[in-house]
Image 1 (cartoon, rainbow, N blue to C red):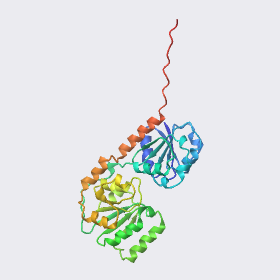
Image 2 (cartoon, rainbow, N blue to C red; image 1 turned 135 degrees about the vertical axis):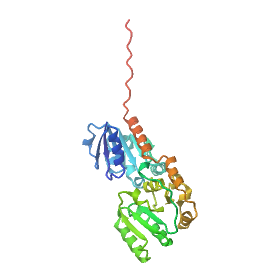
Image 3 (cartoon, rainbow, N blue to C red; image 1 turned 30 degrees about the vertical axis):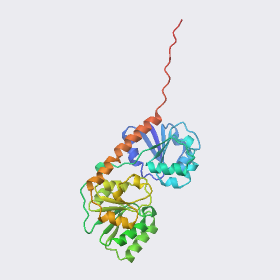
Image 4 (cartoon, rainbow, N blue to C red; image 1 turned 90 degrees about the vertical axis):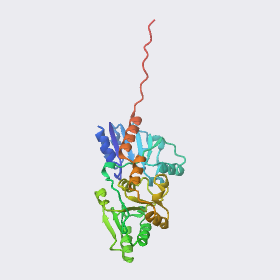
Length: 312
């Protein structure tokens, strides 16, 4: 089967493409929609509900069209610009993103499915962890507004006993400037460290005692799930929808509540890993559901059996 991926960001499709190639499919990846790529294709996959699917959906194509929506798109006008009657399947990555979508775009009618993201559990080594008196706290993700930098800085000021280590690229230089300025003003240079992009996050997390997420919004939270799989206590800002995914003892709404969850709630490494397993947040399950969806959407209708009339 020939499958074309249209993906301008290319952050979340490499593992899917690799899997489909191993299944024997011919897969092509491009960042911009062009009708010429549809020639001879058996399926088109549009990653993100963005300009690519907007342009492509203005026509009806003789090939099945899939669009996978993550989350930011719900807060734009892009979905209103898509001709959903020309899209065969819309994939959401979580139930609560689906709920937000149909609440914001209640006139949209489209065949859809929820396929949650997943991680390769074999790549995230589990170990029992504990909370020392001077913990090393990890923050993972690009340094930008979407990681809740101001809230994080407030937490840093309230925990002088802890070291804070941030891994990830600088997504917005303004927030790198804010980070450096704040750390200097409160005199926390000796306990706050920006370590940049880490190729091997699993290894980088080995000596960390807590993981802190201050994001105001996540559609899945890869770094959250990965940290839990390692058995590290992961304290998550209770963003909209978080309560439908994560245990209440890991969620916090205010810094006062965070302090309680940090110091007073038990540290259960086995439980954190088990939450990932019980919810099937695995790449194996994700790929299986993608395979099943592709098989259904590309299945050609069976021709009616020919009936031979008896001669009289």
